[in-house]
Length: 328
Image (cartoon, rainbow, N blue to C red; front, top):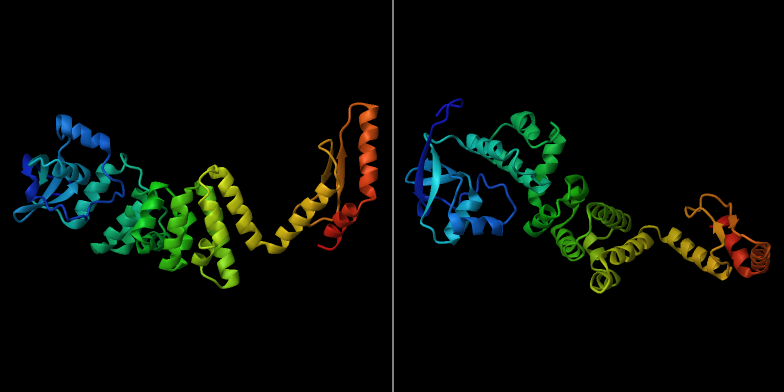
């Protein structure tokens, strides 16, 4: 076989002669879809798999899912196209990538697996960067290559979850500096909560920053009883659970600001103003300016709101409000 003129032989191949354990060209973390199994059960394999000979057996280039389903269904043979003579392992990987390049949207976890397999078959690093990273839609970068290769150090359960939820590398790269204990704790937490990408990012940033500041393990934060209590409240909507988790981590990440916000909320409630009179302050506490906005439609409403403001001016709550911003 030449690079420009490959030779294919089409024939039915015994499933027993295919080395199913050879996973060199299997880049997918997805299980075979039910629809594919139903199709094969009803009409058989329409698109031949691609194999290369190895002695009396065959290695898989393309078609791992179809072969797995056919094996599960106890079908004895599968239509295949055989490449002869057999290409080297880089060519096998290249053939699979070329066939699936526009058919499959790889997750960042799958991209890490692909790049690691290219590395495993001794392809020079510079060629991986210059040739294969662009095929995966990635920038030509040694640092980026190293980050994607690092995905393979993560535990399988976490990699599967990251793939299923299509979490990008830029969000989960913090895991590379965590212990297995902490990444496993994160896996359990996110499997239960299953938040969106932005919420993944926020939570991981909070946990990482808090653990570094307090010199503790990220797993200790995921094991907090109050956090587990929120996660296990299945009667709450996902958004409500996330809001409570956000408040919990915010209070631990910014304890002083959190206490100030609690004081602020209490003092505003104690002023006993209604929604027609609003007190505006900077919740960052960077300015000591307090602004009051009053709405009214009639003289009576105007007088009523003023009376409430007068009562508020004589209250301890107003003094507390001013103290919060004068001496936070």
